[in-house]
Length: 459
Ligand SMILES: Cc1cc2nc3c(=O)[nH]c(=O)nc-3n(C[C@H](O)[C@H](O)[C@H](O)COP(=O)(O)OP(=O)(O)OC[C@H]3O[C@@H](n4cnc5c(N)ncnc54)[C@H](O)[C@@H]3O)c2cc1C
Image (cartoon, rainbow, N blue to C red; front, side, top):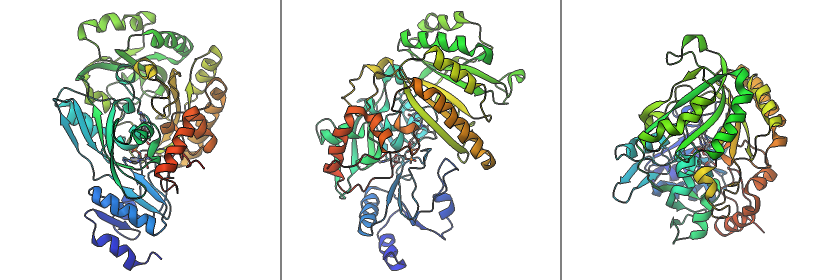
C-alpha cells in the first residue's frame, strides 16, 4: 500500500526531489514535450545522482509501480511518463565531460543534445545526434540517433563507446565492448528496454564549423526535386548530408517576406568536408535547378543543431507516423507531393532523413538497428500549438502514412514511432528481435522496463 508514510521513506534518503500530485512542482514535472500527452504519475522521482536512481527503482519494484524513465521527455508517444506509476526523471543528471586527448565525452543520462554540443564545440569537436538541441541524449541514443552527421559519422549508437547502467534488479554495471558485451549490443538501438543509462560515453569527431542550411524550391517543382534528390543523395560523398522536407516557410525575418507562410519543398544541408571542396561538392545542387531560396553558409555546429529550436518549442501538439524507405519510386513521389501540398498547419512537415553513407556501411547484426539497407527514415509530423487542431494534424499524418506505406518497409525508426503494437516493433528489429528478447530475459525477465517500444523477454 502506497501511503504517505511509505512515500516518506523514499523521500528521506533522496538527494533529488520526490514530487507527488498536489505538490507545486507536479503539474510542470509531469509535462512532456508533446502536449497531446496528458498523464498523471503517482510519483516523480527527480534523481540527483546514480544513488537516487537505484533507490527510486528499488522503491518502484517493491511497491509494484509501473516505471517510466524520463531522459529529455521528447518522445512523441510520451514514453517518458506514465499514468499512476513512477517516473524516474533523469533531468538533473545533466553534465558533459570532454576528454580532448581521447576525443571522447561522458554525458549524463538526463542531458539534452544542446548540452553536449556546447561542451564539445569548445574543443572543436562534435558527435552525431539529431536536429533539435532540446532532444534528450538518452532516448535519442538508445533508439539509434540520426541527424545532420549521419552520412559522415553514422548514427549516435555507432559512436557510443560505453555506458553506465542501473539494471532492473538494482545492480549498477558498466557496459562496453569488453564488459557485458551483450548488453552493450542491445542498448545500441534496443531503446530503454534493458536498464537505466546513467551516463554515456561517445566518440568525438573534429567537426566545428559546418556549411549548412536549406535550399527551398516551389511546390510545383517537388516531383523534379524529389527525383533529383533520390539520385544525388545516394551517390554524393559522405561529406554532405541533406534531408528532404515539405514545409511551410515560417514568417520570420531570415526568410524573404514573399515566401512567408508559403508551402514549399526543400533540402536541409550539412557539409562537413574541407572548406575548399564545398563549392565542388555542392555544384550539382546549384546546377540542378535554381532554388527559390538558398540559405547555405558556414556556421558553428551548435548553431545548426539549434536552428529549428525556435520553430518547435515544447508544449505543442504532435502526432507522427514513420517508415523506413529503400527506394523512392515515382508512384511514392506522387503520393508525397499530394500530401506535402496539404500540410495541415504551419509547423507540420515531412522529412526524409538519409541513412546511407557511413550509417549504411555498418553491419545489420552489429547493432540491433536492422535497417542498414534502407536509404531513408521517413517521418510525417503533424504539429500545432492549438489543441483544437489535434484531430486535423493526426488525421493528415495517418492518411499520409497510409498512402506511402505500400512503398515503404514494414519497420520504422523506433524513435519516430507512436504506440503501434508488438508486430511493428518486431518488424523494425527484423531478425535481431530474437536476440534482443533473449538479452531482455537475462537482464529484465519480469519486464520492469516496459514503458518503451517494448521487447518482451523471450520464453
Ligand atoms: C522535436 C523533435 C525532434 C527530433 N529529432 C530527432 C532527430 O533529429 N533524430 C532522431 O534520431 N530522433 C529525433 N527525435 C526523436 C527522439 O529521438 C525521440 O523522441 C527520443 O525518444 C527522445 O529522447 P528523450 O530522452 O528526449 O525522450 P524521453 O521521452 O525522455 O524518453 C524516450 C524513451 O527513452 C527512454 N530513455 C530516455 N533516457 C533514458 C536513459 N537515460 N536510460 C534508459 N532509458 C531512457 C525512456 O524510458 C523512453 O522509453 C526528435 C523528437 C522530437 C520531439
